[in-house]
Image (cartoon, rainbow, N blue to C red; front, side, top):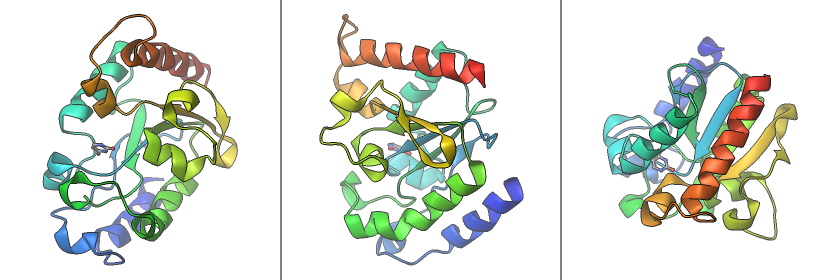
Length: 191
Ligand code: URA
C-alpha cells in the first residue's frame, strides 16, 4: 500500500496542473496511517500546512487531534488524513472548481489504494466533492452514506467551524461533533 501511495505522491509533488502550483511552498499530500480503515478528507491546506507539507497542523488541526484523542484515535495508529486539494489557495479562499478537478486524480488515486472502510468528509467542500445532497453540512453531518469501494461515509463539521462556535451546550456544533465522533468510534471498533 505504501509503495503505491508513494508513486502517486511523487507525481503529486511535481504537479503543475493548476496555478496553485506557482504559489505553494509545499504540496500537502497526507499524514497518518494508511491501514485501509479510517480516512478523513478535509478541504485544503492553510498557511501552516503549506509551510510544513503536512495536513491539519494549524489551530484547526490541533483541535481535530484533540477530538480524535477523546475517543482514543490518533494519526499514529488509526487514521489517514488528506485534503480535497493538495495545494494552498492564496489567502485560504475556497478552492475553485477547476482546481478541485485538477487535483481529483490524486484524491481518487489515494482512495483507490486505501479502499477505506470509513471515510469522514470534514466540512462542506469535502461533502460536496462526494455527495450530491440538496442540503449542506449542518443537515448532512452525523449520518452514514454509501461511499466508494463499499465504504461508509460520514460528513462531520470542520474543526475551524468549531473554533468559531465555542459553546458546548446540548445541541451546539461542539456537542454534535461529540455525538458524531462517538458514533464513528463505535463503527471503527467493529472493523
Ligand atoms: N483545513 C483543512 O481542511 N485542511 C488542512 O489541512 C488544514 C486546515
